Amino acid sequence: MIELLNLALDLTEGRQLVQEIQLRVPRGGNQLITGPSGSGKSRLLKVMAGTERPAHGTVRVGGHQLWPGDGVLALGGKVRLGFAFAAGGLLSNLTLRENMALPLRFQGMPPAEVRQRTEAALERLDLLAVAELRPHAVSASARKHGNLARVLALAPELILLDDPLEGLDAGDRSIALELVQTWAADPDCSLVIAAEEPHAFTHLKAERLQLSPAPVESP
Image (cartoon, rainbow, N blue to C red; front, top):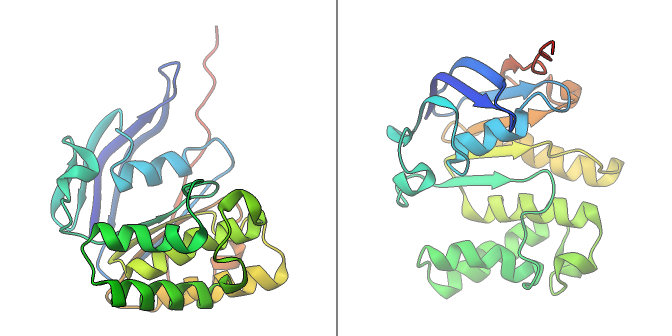
């Protein structure tokens, strides 16, 4: 489903952050990317999603080459991809319900199915009570759940999650973790999770990639 060959990321000052990664996640496979803050986990997910260009290397998703190339534009709707950001990711001028529905409308989905999927995703993430509010008017936990709900509504083949449990209290964490476990058990879904503290995911059947901070060069 996703393949990285000789992949490297650069820091803004030109030093390499991630070097020569070789990674393959098959359909139905689960991958856990771990490492401390600043090691490149979030940027690596964005490269996999086709929204950020690597320093060099090849990225293929579902057999389609993103890099070198045009990034996510290369997918052209051929692969359903869902990305839940660690923070942000929701459009501030739309309600949570509208944020859930927008990607489905872009796909040309019939209105009745858009409503059904949106309602089901909001209910699953316990967001119905705040569905008509905009992101700035809800809690950080609700925004994080909103990102997960948008992914759920899409029913993607490839899911990229950036620290999906970070900052959640016990109740919200349980809701999110149950959903992640559902995705991890789905043989038709490939799941990649980036997490600074991966202990919550150790029970998942997942391969692990450990990233390290870039070495600081001597002046």
